[in-house]
Image 1 (cartoon, rainbow, N blue to C red):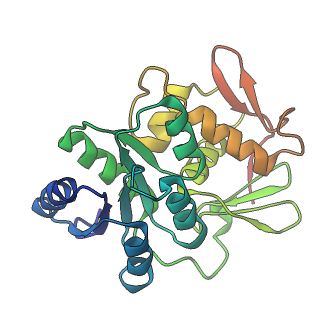
Image 2: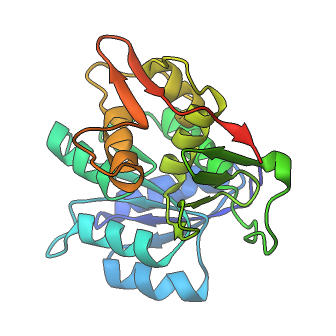
Length: 241
C-alpha cells in the first residue's frame, strides 16, 4: 500500500482536522484539512485525494449530499467520521456509498486501520484498464460478466453497470464462493477486513443495493438469496469465460 496517499479531512471543527491531519502525516500520508463541502469540491479536480474523511454534521450543509456528489463524480475511498451514531444515519451513509462509517469519539489507531483497509480495496492511483480483462479474470453468472482485473460489471445486455468499491468487493466474494451459504461475518471479513460489530447491518445494506442492480425483482431475488439465520448465497453457477 502507498503510505504517501493523499487524504482529505473534512470537518467544521479545526481542532479535529488538525488532530487527524497531524496523526495521518506522522504515518506517512499527505493530509489536506477542509472545513466545508465547497472546499472539498474545489479540491477534487485540482488535487484529488485517494480517500476522504467526511463529517456529516457540517453547519448549513448536508453531509449525505456531499457523499452522493463524491460517489457520482469521483473515484476515491470514503470514510464517514461523525458524531451521529444513530443506526439510521449509518445505514443511509452506507447506502450513499461510504466505504466505512466511524463514530466519534474514536480510537486513532482503529481509524488508521480502517483507512488502510479502504485504501487497499480502492487501489488509489491505479488507472482504469483500457482493455478487456483476461479470460481468467472474467466471471460469468446468469448472463452477467464480472471483470475482476478491470473491476467492472456488465449486464446480460452488455451495458456496464456502475458499482461502488464495497459493492464490487461483495459481488466478487459471492462469485468466488458461488453455491455456498456465506455468513455476514465471512462477507464482512472478505470485503472490509474486520469482524462484525453488534447489530452491524453493513452487509445487509450492500446486498440490498446489489439486488437492485442485479435482480429483475429485488423483492423476489433469484440471484442472491437469503438463508434464514445463516447468511446469503449466490445461486447461479459461475464460470470463467
